[in-house]
Amino acid sequence: QQQVKQSPQSLIVQKGGISIINCAYENTAFDYFPWYQQFPGKGPALLIAIRPDVSEKKEGRFTISFNKSAKQFSLHIMDSQPGDSATYFCAARSGGGADGLTFGKGTHLIIQP
Amino acid sequence: KAGVTQTPRYLIKTRGQQVTLSCSPISGHRSVSWYQQTPGQGLQFLFEYFSETQRNKGNFPGRFSGRQFSNSRSEMNVSTLELGDSALYLCASSLGTVPGTNYGYTFGSGTRLTVV
Image 1 (cartoon, rainbow over the protein chains, first blue to last red):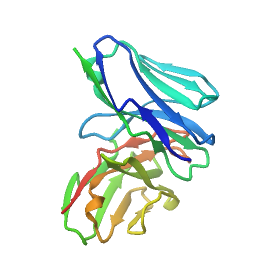
Image 2: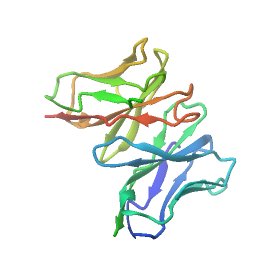
Image 3: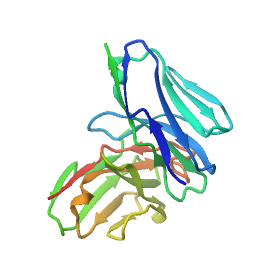
C-alpha cells in the first residue's frame, strides 16, 4: 500500500500559535519522509525531512515528529506567521524508489494576523 | 544559481493533440523527475531520469513519455491529449543518485496545461 494520508485538509491558526499537520502511512519500506511547502503559482519547496531512525528533527521553527511504530509523522510550525500561509505536503519514499515520492493530499494553512 | 526552469509556463491544447514540455535542471544536477499535480489527485509521480536513463515510471498510460538529454535537460510528451490531462506538470531536479531520498528535490514552477 503506497498511500500517505494527510490531515487536516485545511487549518486556520492565529499568528504566534502552533500549526500541526499529521500524516500516516502503510508501507513499512518507506525510509525517507520530507515535507514540502507550496505557494500559489510556485512549485513545492523542501522544508525539512526525516529518516525513521530518529524520532524528531528541528530546523528553525519547523519540527518533524516521527512515530515509527504507529507509522505516523507530523509537522509542527512554532510561532506561526502570516508568511507561513501556504499548502503543505507530506511525502514518503522507499530506498528502492520504484514509485518516486508518494505525496499526501496537502493541507491548506492560513495564519490569521 | 539558477533554479529549475520549465517552459512554457502555460499551454492550451485541444483534445487529441500532443504536447511537449521542457525542463532545465539546476546546473550539476543529473536527476530529473516529473510529477502531475491536480486538485483531485494531488501530486502524482510520472517518471524519473538519471544520466539519460529512465529509472522509474509511475502509473500513467503510455501516452505519457519522456526523455533526458546528455546535458540533463528533460522533456516530457503527452500524446492524444484528453480533458483529464489538464494539470500542473512539475519537474524536479536533484544531485543524488536516488533523488528525493539522499538529496531533496528542487521543483520548478511548473507548466500549467489546459486541454479544451
